Image (tube, rainbow over all chains, first blue to last red; front, side):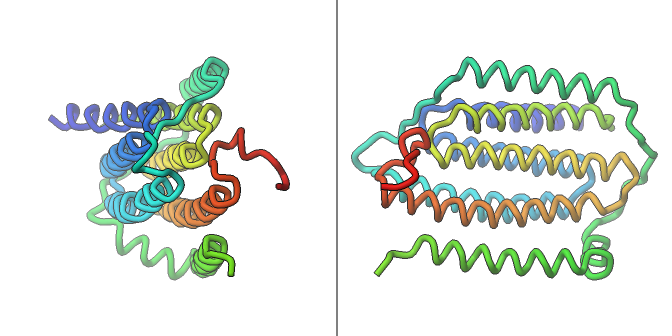
Length: 162
Length: 101
């Protein structure tokens, strides 16, 4: 049962990722991206990262995906034109992507990774919270400044000039 | 349950699909979606190494920072894309290639 769930999540992720990059309809790509992000959250759960799965759903699906759909709506006349898009140079791009995948797979299978036996944690939230406020306090503050800067920059860039 | 290589291969497949999207798409928002796929692949790697490499939660923190950066990147990129659309009336990157109007 667990095995079936795992491969279901993996195939959901990869098939919808393929739809994201191959679909001719822009809005279908965005919807397929939703399932990809859900699948990645599922993979996080299989990797014992419960908090990261929650963050993935909240930030990626609740934030970034909605932003992308807004972008699609604002940059296309959705009432008059079909939201179609075309790909260019699929042959070259496809062969480069396939060769890249084969190369990375070769490297992965040839390398003997350092691995340790780990015990499954009860939960990861308190550990992440402690790390964020001790070891990673400075990066945490820096990234909050970056978010503030990105927020102001995005608002400044997208407003109407007067 | 599954070993590290399974997750690394999954992540490599996701990464290659993202690279394919970035290389072949003409629409700027579709390119952004390809970038999101690449970032997700990197995150799967971070968390897989954190789970199998005995790095405890450090990989989770890195993945968290990547997600925050992806959010900032998406906001700024979409603002730029909307500006390009207002100025040039297209967001196909091969048509909107002029450096000045």
